[in-house]
Image (cartoon, rainbow, N blue to C red; front, top):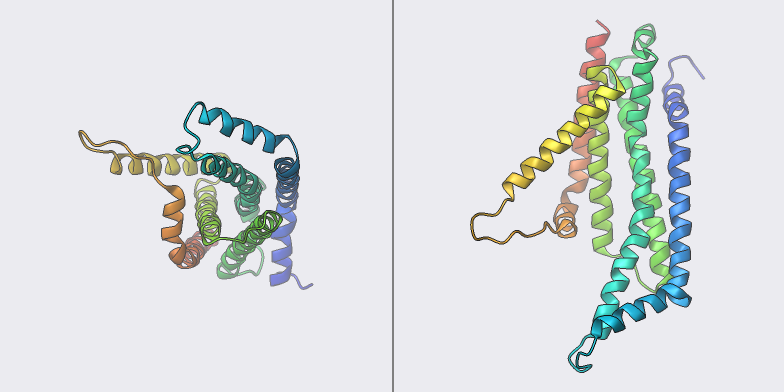
Length: 261
């Protein structure tokens, strides 16, 4: 492998993030096994009996002809399946933040000082960073879809448009946050300050959304339908995802070019 080769730099990125990947896989595996065991308990064990008991208690003394027992039970099932499928899927999103982990290690080891001595152009270094972001996001999406499809198959269902919309929107949103985190870490030259800046950015966005959605006098406050929002954004997520990587490449290129002067 030649010094400064593209493959060698990719391996460097993977080597620095290997512990993050392993931790993410362990977390995903633990929650996947937990979800599978809970599903078995729901089908054949105590969880199914508890749901029946809760639904029966909720009916109380209502007229059986007027009380939708099956509807209530189905609602409880849907909430349970949401947790069973959602938590392991969300654990895979930790892969996407491996880029921020690498950026923090680079700054901690003052890697940029040594990187200036290598014959690697800023464009290549920025491209490698974004390629690793894309790889991590793709791995998270594939693992999530595979796990949810497995749970759906066990329950006689199929992967729905809603599930795909939530997954793709989540992956895109976390990729955006990861790229922003990497930029902040390099601007502030430290993972602590960089992550604090990211948290501050998220808080400002959340406060802004709260102010924009604040109801007027006499208007009842309504919760934001996050699933519905994901479904609306789903057709645009490939464009947003591609734009995120493109903007990230541009900013990284500018930062690397500035430091090599």
